Image (cartoon, rainbow, N blue to C red; front, side, top):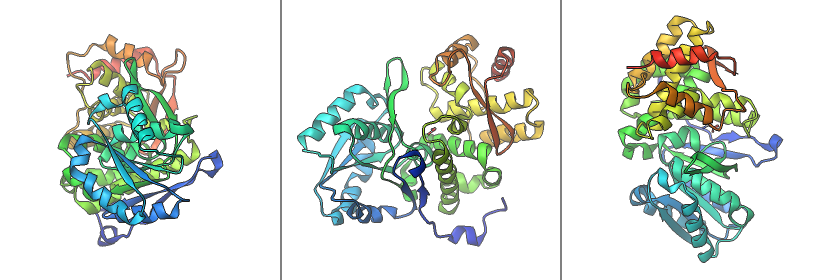
Length: 376
Ligand code: GLY
């Protein structure tokens, strides 16, 4: 992709529609830009007889944006309540589900009420899960406040909570009524959370959008400064890719698996680190591994493999496994990952940048060699 043109920067963004009629779910729109939350109340009025709204958010997001969102909801003309959960992955638990559900009952939340997930992946996954089971399901909306949520977790209807045995082991596919992505919220994001989201954007470039991959190569300075014109393009293109994949394969029967590029080894490294590595860092290492595996198996040329590792490094994400990680432990976590079907381990590999495929035919010796080769 050429450097950003004046036209790219000025472009007005239309909402992205996620068409799901074919799979029997309701379609919805992803509204991306600055100030899109002004349209929240319009969307609520357009729904059929919403009797109240309940915002579910975490302590960190509430202090930054809770009041602002309450104000944006005023014109909808319905009572608004807010439930706060503690910030952090530990809130994705059955304990929090029960606690929030009891508060919803106390607030007389009915099937005509609308839940609003205001936050990142934890809040979105938890609130979506509660929405899918509370009184046999109530509608919900996602307001994505982190970059990971804006490009990945708020779109596509995966909901879930963790168990002591592993992450996301209880969950549903349950689509939101709408997704709101206000890019100005990125200003308050920590560098760590921003990088987590960048790892997912890099993933979309590798699996589906060579132009966006080139943009990432060329516009590092603008991206790390979170300049809005470039962020708008990256978030929009990522959401479009995700929307098109979810439309074709809502429940991950096949194609949606390509979104797990870098995640087979990434999840295992994340678990082996006892979650000291962030998801983005682990996926970054996993993507370097998947590129090297694709090269080792002669699917990918050496230059493309180097470009992939180069982009990941360029954004300050790791491409090597810390030395104290045991290959056996990583293999063990890979085998117990919920995405391993039977005894088979599935990998998303690439033939070139933008052309992924799923295979279970990677010899164990190559998996071990690649992991060993990634050691610092
Ligand atoms: N985050 C992967 C997916 O939504 O399928």
